[in-house]
Image (cartoon, rainbow, N blue to C red):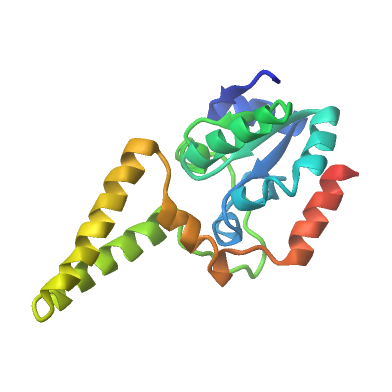
Length: 188
């Protein structure tokens, strides 16, 4: 098992030129602003990227990044299970931006909402729909109860099934050519 660690935004900024940065957010989130030089490999594509990441780790240190540090922490653990050493960014891009560090945005790219914001919108809409529909059809209130239970489960387990579902929406999916180019660049 490879050793793993976390870096603060200031530590990562100091060593950024020496790091291969992997952003595990969705392509839309990545387009909204990412660390300079970061490569986008969404968390749900991490297993397919293992050979390229192994190659990149052999040439230098990997830094995994997401919005808050939760998804990159999960990615770091998955890579460690495959013997790939990596660090994750404590506090994610949120901490990076709060400290005033530069982020890059692709020219002409439309920025998608952060996954947490997408989850809040979806969960709130489903709860509201369940309550409003429940005025005429009382059984519809179970939709609200189910979403509430899912949110509690999400908090207790630090996982999010709704985020996994939302990540499959077209605006959250990488284009195959973009992912292939990223993997080729890392493997090279």
